[in-house]
Amino acid sequence: MSRTRRRPRIAITMGDAAGIGPEITVKALADAAVTSWCIPVVLGDAGVLEKAMAVTGVHLPVRRIATPDVAEGRPGTLEIIDSACIDQESHAWGRVVPAYGEAAVRWTQAAGRLCLAGSVEAMVSAPLNKEAMHEAGYAYEGQTEILGELTQSRPAMVMVVDRMRLMLFTNHMPLRAVCDYVRADRLLARLVLADAALRDMGIPRPRIAVAGLNPHASENGLFGREELDEIVPAIAEARARGIAAEGPYPADTVFLKSRDGVYDLTLALYHDQGLMAVKLVGFGRVVTLLIGLPLIRTSTGHGTAYDIAGRNLADHRNMLEAIRVAAEVARQRDGAAAPGLAAAFGRTGEA
Image (spheres, helix red, strand yellow):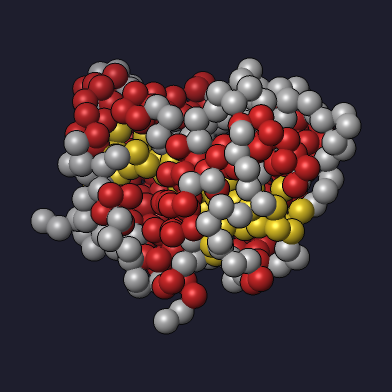
């Protein structure tokens, strides 16, 4: 039996050292379920994680390792590739520090390289802080762009919550620019990517819904031309290629069907259109899965929460779910999906 079939090795990045990432990391690793799913390897700063344990009351022995292959995955143990790059005397929770932003970027890059090298089967990201990252001189929008640059790919985000999967066509883009960005060739590329990713997850005949951009999906051009000129032709071409794409459907109703598992994935055309839907369905439980990458990566669906960092108020259940989903996808790709895969991804695409 291969290593992946038993328990995949998963790199977990600690995130911004001033945010809630360290707290939710140690809380998650204190749950015995994690080591039943995978062999977790943390990338971060052991000193900060020890401070997070003092804050949360979690007591985990820390085992520093040089490479993931020596990780043992013992329950109740924190195994870490320790960068020891955060000054412990000046460390403080809840503030923007460029050095913390730089460290978080480097941990993300390092985890991605471990995935590409086959040293780990997946990675899970705790949140970084965009302001700290930008002040450190990195112009990325977020971790998606870091990994896209590392892998020379254009990944897309899929939000997973209960039976609902939602893909963003655009991410952090001004709303004024979205209308110009909506083009048939770009939409088709996303539909092709979504279909391939869903098949990779074990869904043989994925059904994909496309949300409209304009009110009522433009009412046949009455409220805008984007649907008629770009979205409908993209869906028609996707269907000609054997992709079961449907729409465009008015955004005020399509997400209700997504919630109920009618579709395997819904394509939202801009950031808030999609994020409002998934967060209303399951705020605090949303997991982000990147597709279109030559690696498996999930992350929590929330930010660094500086306002509550260091106060033992952070809920770690979203981190637990991100780890679980990463482990399930890793097993699925290895052809040995665990029984929980249906719970992780909802319906299986059967007619």
